Length: 591
Image (cartoon, rainbow, N blue to C red; front, side, top):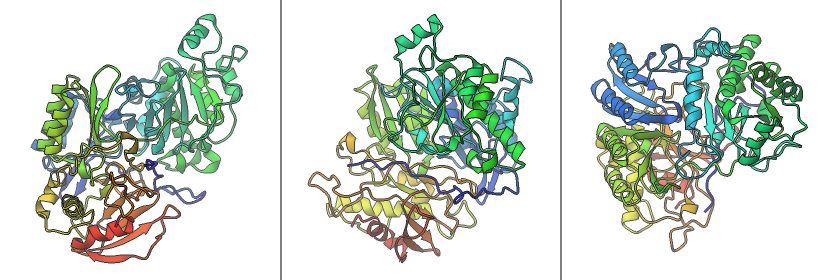
């Protein structure tokens, strides 16, 4: 079964159109709370999704004692707390500072960093990017007015939009596909490729003309004998001036980039953001993202290479970014590592956990020995450090708590906006209806019919805790090569606040008309489904998807939408909430 490739976001302006921002970014943070119908909302930036055990416990206490007792994980691996009282801002900030989750008030909303969540855990990738995350975060929070070359410029980074995104990919291609504003991709020679704006152009790209990819030993030797450490050959000019002279004036959005040393990569990424802010000022616009810059002010390899050279960072232009090995995010289950330890990959239904579920995750993080929890951009969690014999028992506990631990769960590929009661514009409690839909699929599996079986689950309970409403069903073994992949998801850039929308995991293996005797698929991957409470459809996936739009308290309009202009591919069908699972299955071609 072919994996579903990450899909592009739907927030890109059509053609060459540049969005006009008539206001400052209103993205929420830990200090700037967003008022919703169910109370205030705080978004807590967690660079790379990396939490120590102590920080994870602090987050849980904040959600229980100040919020509604639940945590949301966003499409950038950050955490959200809902249901906050209007006057709790000072106490919330104090608790986060004490836990090391708010190191700089001025930079609260700019610390948006996603990183390959299995980096350093499964033996894949070309580098462990955890160190890059720490260094880049420190650079983003650097307020030094003066210092070494390029350091003083970093003090301007507090001016970044709360939507500006960095991605640090260890070479496997997972977060490189998320369309970040600044992306670092580790390379096999110990270096990195720096690119700006948009997702990767796809497979089949090649390294720069004349460039080599030396192995680690050769690279180290070249450093000691004074020859080129960037893979250009000994005849190359290694000075900063030479790096700038090699750059072109082409836009970096076309798939090109700059090759830099691994030790320079985090600071180069921070300086790329400085270059972006310079272009924003020159353009006279309020662009929030790299792709929003007017064409005449677009970031170029030449401009960025010159800035890096001025900071003492050597950069070699590359025509095309080297193709990563894969764009697959972690599938739920146990992930063996080269050190004899296993990591546990868990998906959260609708991206939300209850207080009890979060306590279980933090307890297991401690039990595993790593005292670490990694939140992923696919609204999941990775727990490192388990002995092989301990992993199955831990997964069993997590599945029993209603979390997704196998790649064949019907929760995978199901997304929903916040809905009622959190959003005043929503016409329905879409999370409860999504839980009912998944429960109907689960009953069909349990009945052995391979068909959707409608029922009447406790939708009130599902709304209060969608993650616990339906435990991970059908826990049969699945060939890892057939694991599903989540289409790339990002926070909506249309001006609507991302208040918890999510598509979990990849397109789910719902009942198919064309299945093999072992349950494998014989046809193409079905598209993901997204349940929306109003016509804004906040946070819906890109590419081809099934749109389940609320049209009243108990009704939905189901349509298949395509990547081209987000236009409908099929006529819509109006159904009740009880009929939603069957209509969605038909639209996905899974009946």
